[in-house]
Image (cartoon, rainbow, N blue to C red; front, side, top):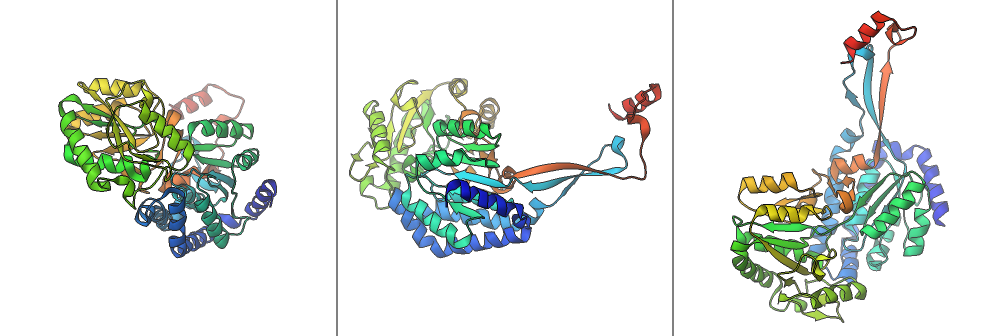
Length: 456
């Protein structure tokens, strides 16, 4: 089916009102949950083929989180979808006010290659829970996972409800020309700008989940051993190809040497002395990104790591620095297993360094000093983050996840995800047995006094 015809079929299906049924949405989520469980080995094999991820990492960071989101949505769906009563001002007496939850309608979900299953299916879970139809466009850079997603979705949903469009730029362009009711995009800023431009032609609302250079601050009061382990985990997970991975370190000068020693020890403990021989260590997605990362390495001082294998597209966990603020590692989001560091002596200098750059998707602060933590939180704008850990703030359905500024707009996960794909219709329902006359012309002084009494 052609893309235009596919959207028209979904538009017609949506207009039947079938997806408005909370019972149908719940059944759809049940079916999706069961099929993911059934196809889990096949899904993990596809992710391994695309990115070299181990089965455990794929479950921990992809299928498991998707299943968790489905479970959360099923538990709360009826409450999320219900009409919400709100207080009515006395001036509108006699009446009642409420908010009706309405699906946007037909949505497009465009996902990236780095977490190809999670970042396709989790927005889909939220869109289905909210009562929409959906067309999914997974990345062409993760073809095995895209194919298994299509197989999975086709087994659970008719095309007029949920469909998958595979392909590359041609398909992306064709999709963005269509008049969707909502677009949810995860990816880089360049494509995000194009999505926003195309959406504007149809006045289509969007959520953009992008990235940026997420800083990680280690102050002099931090538990350095724990910080080293948690930063190493967050940075080198999925070979650093994580939008919320720590992109660079800002370390207090007084603890730099001790921390760097502990950090190298933590990396060696996790990945072994020869990480490229570790069967659970993944790879870079393609030669273009491998070459880009290699150029960064060639321009910086390597403290440890740096081993590369162009045949397997692997780069060992690497630490570089100290780097210059405008050096190769600081000119772009790294999106790979290379971690640059800089030092600071005053926390305000670290804060200013971050503030005068584009707002990051994540910020991580390692400290045991409450005043320092609050100083950073109150003076730096960022999408979300952690204190004394990395990554884990996105692994909960109880909080929204999203960026700010160039790192994105809008959020999802749990109720935030439901709300993202929902239009709220504010409604006042007025009784007929009383009709106060003071709002009607002709106006006089006593009507003005009444209005001023109610509106102040």
